[in-house]
Length: 194
Image (tube, rainbow, N blue to C red; front, top):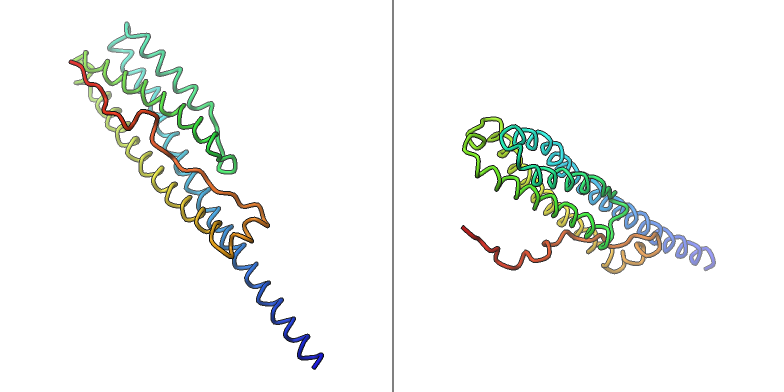
């Protein structure tokens, strides 16, 4: 009878151990998916940041007296690249700060593109046209990378909230990942003036 009890306890311990093992490793895998997805987001933002000096220099050659706009773009790029955020530091607050700096850069780039509309020679420049196309493509890549990040963050967040995996998540300190959200004011129709 005592031997049977020992086997039952060993069986229970084996099941609990197997559950802990698979739950923990599953959460680690999902956490790494979030980290990888975040790295992809950063790569696309870096691509945009790398394109900006070429774009600014091209515009500068045609529209040198638009120095205020060019300076704003350079300053916004510097600010955006100074906000470094690793996947381990993702909190709603740090992600909001990151998004704000990227939003300011996007706004400055929009003003730069608007300035280019005033210069037919610049718009006709093949170099400017290629850079503008690359920048538009990069903005699309950023949108896709952000969506992919939100998708894997959702999977991770669901996994750490589901019972009984939530017990393992709590034991080992797994916490929810924040999502990218729309920029403030994105819900309002932009005002277009001619």
